[in-house]
Length: 452
Image (cartoon, rainbow, N blue to C red):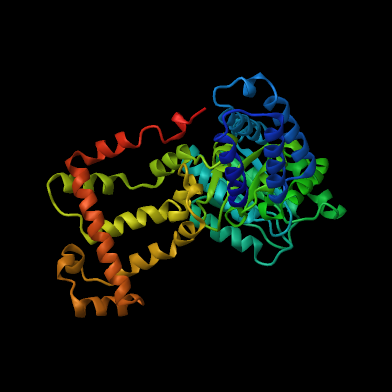
C-alpha cells in the first residue's frame, strides 16, 4: 500500500532536503509535486486542497524559513499534517460496556465483510482475551452463512447458526440472547452486502441496528476503490451511525487514496487495515506509523510488535543456545528462519516496514519476492534429515535428486547452499559478540533518531 505515493513523495522531499534554504518559489514547486502525488494516489480533491493549504501556511512561516535545516523542517511538517489528516492516534474499539458488546459489520457487496468478521474475532481472542460469538445475517448470498461458519472454526470463535429462510433481524436478536445467556464478551454481526441506493436493504440494516444496539458499527470497504471508498462511507454514515472503518485489500492497493480521504470526508476513523485472505491479516490503523511509511521512514514499531507476536521464542532460544555451544547453523535451522520470516508477512512485508527501503532501485525491489522463500523451503524439504544436518555431504547426485524432488534446478540448489554458507558465517560471528558490533553500527538509522 502507498507504493506509488511513497516513491513520488520521497523523490520530491529528498530533493528539498539538500537545499540550504527555502524560498517561496521552491516551496511552491515542492507543494505542486506533493499535490500531484496525492491526486495520482486517488486522494479526494477537497482533501488534497485543504492538506496543501495547511502545509503551505506552516511552510512560509518562521518554523521553516528560520530553521537550520529548512528542507528537513518541511518534511517534518508534511509528516505531521499526514498524521493529522488520518486522525492523530489509533482509534481503538470501544468495548467498554455491559457484555456482550455488539459489533455490527456493514458495507458493500464484495468488500470483505465476512472475512473481516473472522479476522476481527481472531484479533479480539488473541490480543484482547475476549470470548467471541459470530453470526451471519446474510440470507441473500449463497453459502455466506457456511463461509462464516468455516472461518469461525479456523479462528477459534463460536458460531451462532442461522438459515437462509430466516429474518435477519430475528437471527441477530436470537444471537444476542444466546451471547447474554452464555456470557460472551463480544458478539460480531455479519450483514449482507448492500448498495446505499437500495432503500429496502438500507432499511433492513437500520432495523438490525435498532434490534441489537451495537457499541461499534464498522463500515468495511475495499481500499482499491480509492476516493469512492470515502464517498460510499459518507453515504452509509448518513443512513447509519458509523463508529469507524475497516479498510480491506490494502495489499493490492499501491495508491492509498482511501486511507488519506476517509477521515476528512466522513469524520470517522479508520480502525483497522486488512491485507490478504489470511485470518491473521488485520492490523490496527496507526496514523503516525502509516505517515512514516508513506514518507519512506519505515514502521519499526509495527515490525517489533509483529515479531513479538509471531516469532517462536523457544526456537530462537534453542538456536541461540546451540550457537553459543559452538555448534553449526545447519539447514534445519535455516528452514526454521524461513518459516518465521514467512509467518511475518514474507520479505515484502518486512521491507515495507524498514526505514529507507524506498530508496532501493526499482530493479532491486522487484527481485525481492516471497516466491524465493517458498522455493528455498521446498528445496530443504526435499533433503533427508542427514543432509539437512550435514550439508557438506550434498554433492552432484544428491543435488540432482533434491532439485528433481523440489521441482527446481541444480542451480537453485547450489544457490541455496551458498546462501546457507553465508548465513552460517554470519551466525558464527554473531555468537562471538558480532551482534553487539552490528547494532552499534546501526545506531542513528531508526525513527527515534530521525533528522528532525
